[in-house]
Amino acid sequence: NEARLQISNAGTNGQFLSKQSGNTGGLTWADAKQWTATTEGLVTLTQGQNNIDFTIPADVNMIKIVFWGISQVSSELFEIKVGFADGTIKTTGYLNTSTYWYHGNTPSLSENTDAIKLNGWTAAGNYWYGELNFSSVGQDGRRWSYFMAPYNTTYGEYFTMCNGRISFASGEQLRKIRFTTPSGNGYDSGGQIIVYTATF
Image 1 (cartoon, one colour):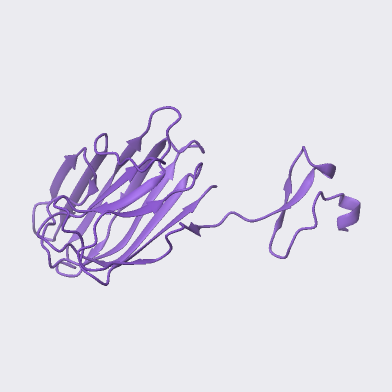
Image 2 (image 1 turned 60 degrees about the horizontal axis):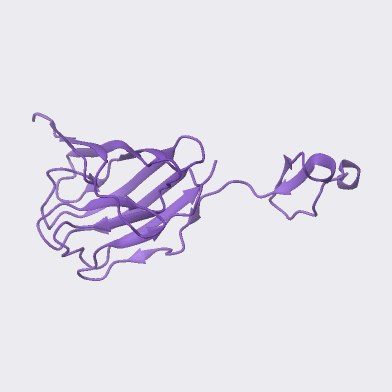
């Protein structure tokens, strides 16, 4: 029973027993790892809203961004950028490859270093549905790879995607996610974005 195991805490339903050598008895009830929404929660966009920021906790190594029905007000790309705890946004150093193809057509492929984006998709009437997944090696929050393959309502028969990597200097971490547009005209109303983080 629990008393004979000398577990260091009382625990609650749903927790699991983990090894904690520094605690009494060497065993501790702990919460299972799970995805947690950022403090901003679910954001529903207003007309012309731009620079939509999400705060990433320290030391996470997994980030999942889910978006539904987002579209740019102007004919331009939508971009996702990352930043630091002080709110500064990284504008260079991305290694982003994007591609799209359609049966019978020659695939398009391009690279850029200024943001995470789907190059070539600038029409204002395009609505996007999907997710962007980040993974980091270790738990220092410095080295990230990512992948995104959203659905587009106007060209649903096309397959479009981007992937790449972002790295930070020693002691720096990814602490902010920003949805933005180059012109600053932002997004149409009604789209929704939520960001989850986890440490595994």
